[in-house]
Length: 378
Image (tube, rainbow, N blue to C red; front, top):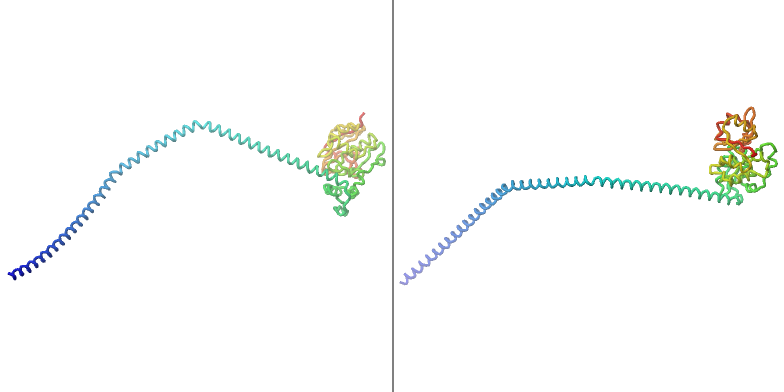
């Protein structure tokens, strides 16, 4: 019994173990198959889902594409219509405002042009005023310095060489240096006058006696560069450089009146103080209006040989304004005192040499700008 029991027990244990191993293996196999089945099923489902999803998307895209294109086309047409309407409205409004805009533009352009013209005018006017002020200031300084320098002593060594001789130039009168040198180069007769310029103060206030220069019934020949009066002022220059007008009048006045108290110095003062000296020189109105204040009569003549001869025959003297030529390089006055068979006799206040010649009408005609006859008033 015991053995049977033991044997039964051993057998049961073996069977139990085999059953357990069997069940365990079976269960493991079942689990493996279940897991493989589940994995495979899941994989199949994923693949089917992916195919389904991709196909569904493709179908949807294909089905939505015509709708999207139609929608875009409709939107584009609406936008084009809106833009056309807007453009048309802008064109209409632009047409309506074109007139006002054009008028406004023209008005603004006119205002700008007017402002530019005003600015240009103001600029030109300011420039002219400035130039006139500068010229007036320079002239004032020159006159002041010239007046001041008349009282200064001579300064040796401050000079310029003229044909080997030194001519001192006092401070404030340097403006005459080139003119004096040019005068000497053109007219050797002026050498004594130019060389004595440093000593001008002893002549400028000297009493003038014309007794030796005048003979009754004759027209005296007076030189503008005579030291007795040549250094005295005439305008912004000196009588010796620019006093041909007063000298011609002085020669005629002495002939008609024999008043020896009227010297070239006084005659230059008369011409200047009476307003017959201008920036250009002696005014032509002196020979018609100014001479009447001296008891003389002056009338303009025509440039004709016979007319000139008749004026001289009736006791007149002729004053001529000359162009550049035999008597001058700029402008000059001469006096014609008579005529002969070979031509006219001239008193030139700048040269004795030209005064000693006889001048034919043809030689004078091209050089005369204007002429006047002077007589004593009745």
